[in-house]
Length: 165
View (cartoon, rainbow, N blue to C red):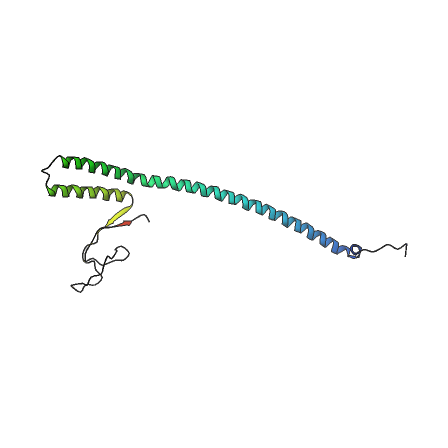
């Protein structure tokens, strides 16, 4: 038995099984390489997404300023008008109450125009209109004298509706 070759476990495996194992190893190596590539692409996409998010946040901040700018300008004009008219009224002791009322209503119209330019409409329900919970806010509920339920009994103040959103 000295002259006989020693058989090992590897030599007992059939040749086609060795080929199959080689193919499996090669296939596994290919899958691992593809996974590495996929991981690198995913990491690259994450970096792009983060950069785009940062850019988006900067653009939104600038957009807010662009949107607010006309309103701020209108409010500045209104302030200047109020100060100018207050100075005129202070120097005119004979200014009747009716003139002051008209003056204040004209300022309210100036503010209303500023709001409309900003996409906000004034909502003015009338007494007797049908109550719409989507547009009106109930302050309290009162019993209808004429039996007409679900209507506006009194208007406390105007409301506002954003026509953009």
